Length: 440
Image (cartoon, rainbow, N blue to C red; front, side, top):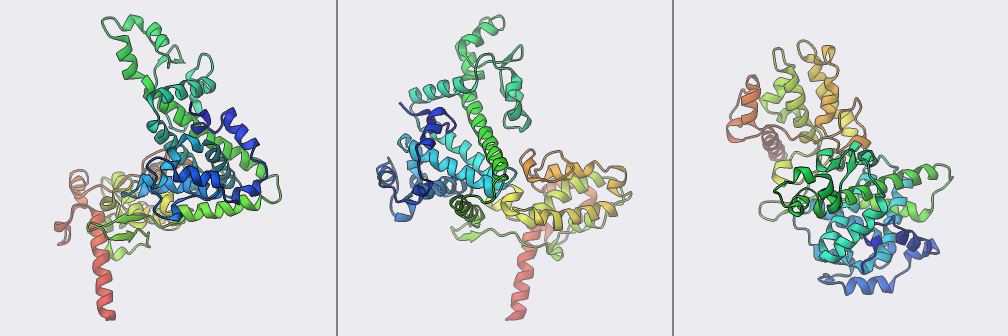
C-alpha cells in the first residue's frame, strides 16, 4: 500500500521519516539507494548523469526544477523526472520537502516568490502523483488523509484560510446547514428530498466525487506548506545564524528560480525571455495618447484597463502572446523593482495628466491598478497578495476600437498588427535594426 507521506509530508509517517534522518550533514552524502531507485523507476530517462540526483540535496533541487520546467517549458519531458512519481521514493522525498521548506523559510521568508513556488510545486506534484496511482490506491489515500485532516462535522469556516486565499471557492463546495459534505451516504441523506427521480450516485459523482476531494486535499497541503514556512521563519528569527546547509540550499533554489525562462520560436529556435527597460519611442499612438492624459471621457478605462496591462507587459513580458506561457509579475521582477520604479510612476503620471486628475476624485482606482497586475484588491502592491487576481493581458486593437474608440488613431504599422503590444515589439526590432545599421 502507498504511504500517506507520499502525498502528505505532514502526516505522522512523514514526521517519523524526518526524525529518523539523524545527522543533517548526511544530506550531502552520495546515496546509493536513491540512485538505484531513480535508475530503476518505470519510464525513467537516464540518458545523462545530470538527470540523476545523487544525494538528498540534489533531490530537493530536482523536485523544484521539475515544477519550474513543467510550468515554463512547452517541450517538458516528464521521463527525466519519472522517479518523482514512484511511491518508493517517499522516504527520500519527504526529507527533500522539509529541506526545501526550511531553506526557503530561513533565507527568504513566507511572503516571497520562493515560498509561493514551494507551495505551488507541492500542489502540482501531489496532483501528478495522484493521477499516476491506481484507482484503488488513490481512493485509499484520499479517504485516509482527508479523514485525518477533516475530523467530524466540518463547517465551512474550517476551510477559512483556503477560502480567504482563494485557493478554493465556496461555489466549488457542497454544503448542508453550514457543514461540508464529502461522504456519499451523507450526501444522499442530506439531499434526499431534492433527489427525487434522480440517480443519487450519479449526482454525487457529478457534484463531489473524487475530484472535489482531491481539490480540497491538494489545497489543504499547499496551505499547510505555507503555514510551515511561516512557522519556521518565525522561529529562525530567534536564532543568530541559520544552518549553513540550509543557506547553501537556498542559494541553489535561487539559481533554479532565476534561471532565464526558455521558450521556443516558430522554427524551434531557442530564445531567452528577458525583461528590458521601456523605449517610449516604440510605443504605439494609442499608448502615447493615454500617457499625455485623457482630457475627455473614458479616463478610468484608459488608465486601468488599457494602460496598466500594456505597460506592465511591455516592460516585463512583451512576448506573452507568442510564447503563450502564463507567468506572474514576480517571475520576471522578483523584488518588484521595475513595478515600483518604472511601471507605476508612468501610470500615475498619466493619471495625473487626465482632466480632472484621476486620483484627485477617485483615489480608489489605485487599488484597481494593483488588481490588474495580479496583486488583489489592496492599496499596496505586496508579494504576499500576488495571485489573488489575474495579471490582465493588454486588450487587442479591435477591443480598443470598441471600448475606447477615441484612442484609435492608426499609423501605417497599426494596419499590420492586431495588438498594441505587437506594435511595441515590431518598433523595438525596427529601432534595434536601425541602430545596428548605423553602427555597421
